[in-house]
Image 1 (cartoon, rainbow, N blue to C red):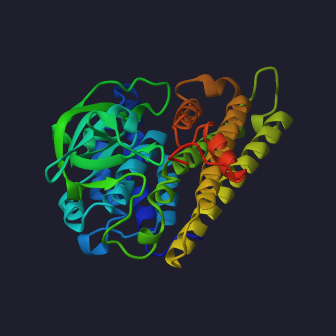
Image 2 (cartoon, rainbow, N blue to C red):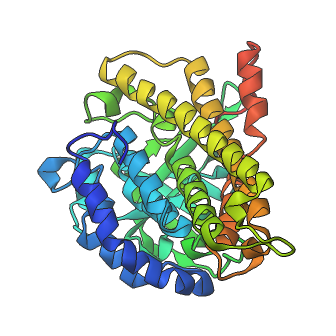
Length: 392
């Protein structure tokens, strides 16, 4: 267990280990059905793991964001898709904090209350209405939507049929509404992260009261205090999905170590662990993953410390946080590539965890918040240019 984990978080790590056998037992089914089985979701609920960021006075764990990231990584060491769904469901209160206190309690006061959704504004239209807003369109790649009680969607605010602009950028509004008001489509068909059930959700002219919405680009909690109040929303959720990639990569490395103890490669007499190439690749992979973790957690731990101290965050801070995310993701993928090569034909067999880990990390890192294109936005900021994007 990571020595930087707080005492408050340690019981939750023990709970992860207890539900590990349930996650493993249903991993193949999740892969086949492209959906996280209800038995796994129930295990998360029963353990209170989806409520780690909920205030304690509402029965939650009230953990710090750094603790939650390490928990996501721990779940992902068992299974990448389960880790991804855990990151989405346990991280959803970060968005809920930007609603009114009453709206937050309405959603998350339910012991089974979970929100899923998408912040991609390109496919959603938002129009002002008396007392709130009307949302129409599609929330794309809404992971865990089949198990959510509320759907979050973000879209461009339209006025007279045209996007409303401020300083050249469209005004964007995010809102949460009961997922029963949307239709979940069967659109999730990918090579990796199949068990996440990241289907699109359609909705039309859904009225969302103003207190259940927030300004997506300028989100600020109207009632939270401390670090959650001071840290910008985009820095709060910057790392949840990367921790999944780190955990999945560790799963691959652990599996290679197990294989290397017994496997005797073709045309050789010694075990794989005695093969110099395997030794080199395993050491390289270990170094890459440790470097990724060190950079990523150092950055996120520092963000939390600054938030607790009430410091302000600049656009450069946001850029450096994104750089840590994308760099950690790239290093982790490189580590898994080395592991897959070192394992030989084992890594090509669907019965081998390395095969799934390889597909999962390559699929996960295509996410818009950690793909290669983010380097361009970061580079522009570091050069002193306008980021050219509302999302860094």
